[in-house]
Image (tube, rainbow, N blue to C red; front, side):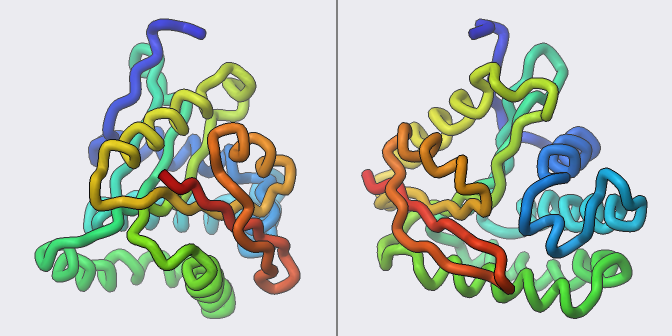
Length: 209
C-alpha cells in the first residue's frame, strides 16, 4: 500500500471532486439505478445523480455530519460521509437551511423519487440497534482505483474515530450490494437486518464496539 495516502476532512472547495467521484462510483448501484436510471447511458439520469450527490455534500455542512477523503497527493481516491450520533442545538437550527438546498434538487428529481429516498431513510434507520451510534451514509472509491486498499483505509479511519468516541456504541450502514457483506464482516460488522425498498434488497449492518 502506498505510504503517500492521507485521510483528511473535505472542505467546501472539494465539492467538485466529491461529486465526480461519488457519481461515477455509484453509477451501477442497484438503488441509484432504481431511483435515477442508468447514469452511464442516460444524460438525464447523470444529471439527477449529480444533483443528488451535490445535495448530500451540501447537507453534510449543515447537519452533524462529516465528509472524509483518501488522497494521494492532491487526487481524491475515495471518500465517505458519516453522521455523528449527537447534534447540538446550533446544528439542529442549521438543519432548517436544508430547505434552501432542497429547492435545486426538486428541479432535478421527481416527487416519487424523493418519496422513495425518504422511505429508505425511515426504514433503514428504524432497523438500526437502539443504541447511540454513528451512521455511515455513503462510502465510495474512484472506479479506477478500486482494489488498491483505499476502501480499507477509509473504513479503518472511520472505525478508529468511532472507537475513540466515548458517546458512540458503534456504527450502522446499509448496502444494496450483497457482495459487500463479506467485506464489511471482515471489519467486524454483522448483518442485523435484510429488508426491501420498492423491491430493491437492502442489507443493514452494524459494528458494535
